[in-house]
Length: 325
Image (cartoon, rainbow, N blue to C red):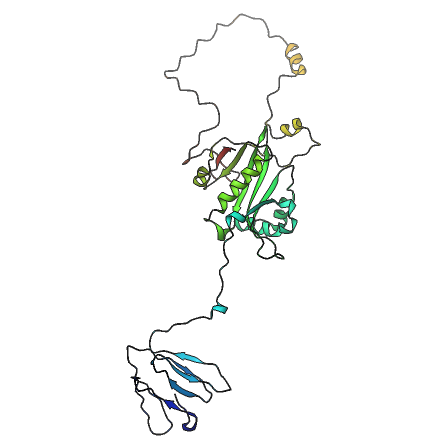
C-alpha cells in the first residue's frame, strides 16, 4: 500500500500490538499482526485516513468524498457477510390448515398454472393438457385443484396439487381417482395426504361411497391412507343426461357369443344326407389321463403389495387399489 505523505494520517493506540515499518521514499505500510488478533484493512484509491481501533479489532481507511470500489483484506479466514436486506428470502410453505380444494372449471384463470403442474410430472402437449382440463364439469369427469391462500389480495392462489375424478361403469356409488400430483418442491410435507383427504370429503358430500385408483410405485402411501388392493374398474370418459345408461354400458363390453341365427339352422336342416352304406365300427375309447391337473381359479389374477398381474397400456406393472369412504 502506498500513500502520499500529505494525504496520510496515522494514529496508533498504545495497547495495539501491530508493528509498522516505514522505508525511505514513498511511505509504505507493512503491518506485523498478532496471530491472536484479526485486523481488516479497507482499501480505497481516494485520499484516506488510517485509524486503528483501540481494541485492535479493525483497521479502517475512511474514504474521501470521491468513493471508489473497495476491497476488504483480512489476515485470517475470509468471510463474506451479505446485507440482510439483499439476502434471498425462502418462500414459506403453505399452511396445511389454510389449503382449499376447488374444481378447475370454477377457477378458469388457473388453468395454465394447473396444466404446468401436471406437465411437470407427465410431459404432454400444452394444448392437449388444457383441452383435458377444460372438460371438467360437475357431471364428471371433474378436476380438483389444491390451492394455497392468496399471498396478497391482488395475487392469484398457488396451485399446490391436482386430482381427477371420473364415474365408474356399472358402479353408481364409485369414483375413479386419476392424475394425482403435488408440486415437486412441496412433496414429503403432507400435501398429498391433504389432497386425498379433501377429495374423499368432496366425494362423500355428493353421495359416493367408494374410491378406486391405480399406482405404479406409491403403494405404501395409499396403504397408509386406508386403501387396499382391489380389482380393475373402467372409468367413464364422459357422461351425458342425453345418453341412456344402457347405451353407455354397451360401449366397453366385450362382444358376447350370439345364439345361432335362423338362417344357419335352416341350412343345417336342408343339408344333403350322407350316402347310406355299411355301418363302420365305433372308434376305440380314448385312454384316461394319468394325472388330473387342477382347473385354474376363476376370477381376476391375484396381486400383492410386491407383485401384480395387471399392466397399463405401456406394459408397466400397475396396482389397483380401492377404499370405502
